[in-house]
Image (cartoon, rainbow, N blue to C red; front, side):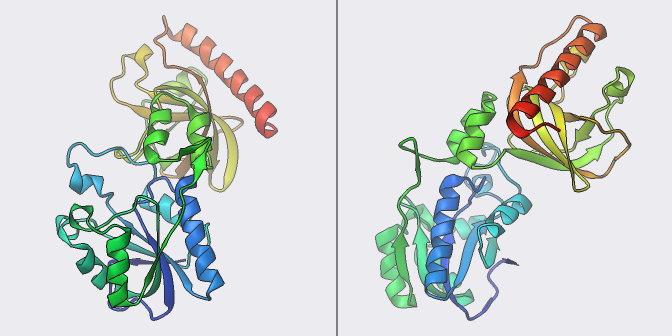
Length: 311
């Protein structure tokens, strides 16, 4: 998949079927829309393209009150590429972009790609004041030579899948619900940074991950995860929270990798959340904490063995 930032004139001259959206999380609803775009492009021998935004429009539309993101741009690109998309266009979302009319936005887009069909979701709209709904975009298409194809919503148990529902599930630690809506395990990734090394002193050395501060974190607690480090997958027990036993105040994400030892500071660690074992608690001393972590590790091994064939 080719990735282009901005709207250079032109990107290429290939006849294109394209869809537009923030696609935060690239959840099952997004995958349904993007998949329909790819399918229609293949049926007509055209290029399949996705136009998305970075930063998320919330940063500009709701400054100071933006919702946490479910994916970074890199993660979005990986998920979109896996759906068979040929071209991803990333538009910097600014106050200028927000002020464009639907006609102005589509004029810029059609100057960059040979748009033949625009695939949109059932409630899609773009342009200043969201005036570019399906009928308006169809009218604009008569000028620029593209048709609009509305894709029916993807329903799960009779309800539409949304990033809002996924964030709500994560906020209470319901990982299984979030993963079912996403269609894959919710993940976090980032470089391993040096912590206070307290885990080493109690027999459970952890990898502390420097996570993008804009990312959605699951509810405080202890989770069964899969961890990927240097291309190798491990079972893991991850803690999300403030470590109240040690009077912590800063939210951290740290993981104990099962059957692994070594110093890997600076390496990227990817965590995939599978199941919540418990909430975060303050224990009466280190001995009680160690005993609980020992039980957590045993519970994680048992869960992985039952659900995923073990380590």
